[in-house]
Image 1: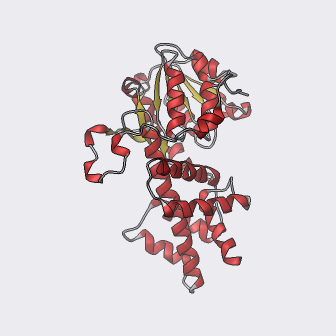
Image 2: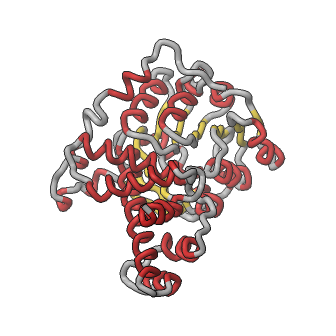
Image 3: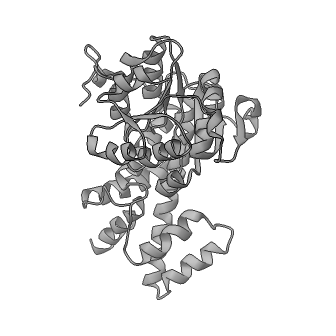
Length: 344
């Protein structure tokens, strides 16, 4: 297990101002004033030549997202070293040819670039900066790419610890869930050291279908929270519609089909709708993670005095769903929270 870094007051970090120095284009300004030059966007094939991939890649965190991402790197011919708190989760990747190290520090020390995919800001901070964390294995010439979904201040703290070692840092949270991770179809929302972004572009193209470079550390985290806030709010509205249709005597399966052919068609509705109608929620993105992202997005909004009443209401439904034991179900299980409210 990785322990917290000695002498660091994590409670104080958590209670500090959420985004004390948010860049100007994230402050409340008309959207037409957004500067196109503040980010870059490239789309590449996920089929990259193994010869283009630098050697010695580390991967920390082999959960529902990290495992398929690391597998894609291995299948592309990368020399991958893995670590996970539960060592048994490393075994399938070792069978595919990955190496194993018993701590994040040892992975980072043995690799040129280390990726990390952790469940929440606390885990991301511990794995990067803990007593046996990756920062203890970093040095000039190395790079650390955090693909976890965290808040801006956490990302900036990790950036600071990595930079103190002389290494480079890139935040790169992903848009996409289990299936896109398996298929190498993720979207990377990156910010930080441009040199590291360019250096790891081949890795990102193996694991994803597109990548955005958004400038300073914190911008990638903010973009991911905005996207997931919208997604979480959309799902609660969709769930309301399915239940309403059933209440008034319509077939909710037909509602899903109608939506799929109209202006509000979305892959999320088409993929999850049929299972939701049957009260089935196979996990692609755990509900507890969606609620965590809603909470972080609401904190981001509060830091810039932006009202988000719809997201706040949606967040309460996810909390109700968690209280009914649905944390590890797919986030589409939020519909069960609405069923509970109807019974009350």
